Amino acid sequence: MIVGESGVSPEYFLYKMRWWEVDRIIAGVRRRYRSIYETSRHLEWVLIQMFGDKKEKHKLPATPMAFYKFPWEKDDVVLEKLPEETEEERKLMQELSNGYNWQSGKGNQKTAIGR
Picture 1 (cartoon, rainbow, N blue to C red):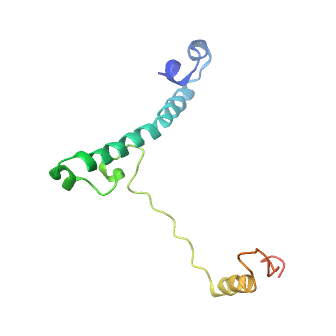
Picture 2: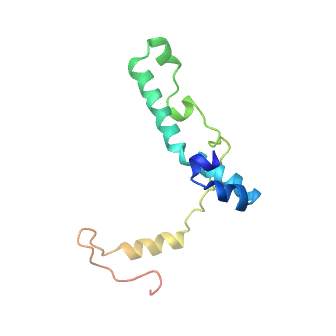
């Protein structure tokens, strides 16, 4: 796999490669094929939607990602919540946008730095 699919020369693999490089090369090869796997999953989901019988369509999840999960997709990813903007920030943004002509791009020349 390392010599054939990743393009590493046999000489480098046998005589020069370090043990820690092997894991990274294999991970790179797997990452190369992710888009193909995800495209195949989406295509399969669409084909079942189009040509599957009613029983199969009824069991089918709403999205291709729910149809089949790959090992690199994790359910427990928690997005960090952004802090809410303060009243001072709202007033500053309102002040910066007043008098600005959004179509011409001309108007208020104030900036947040040079008030």
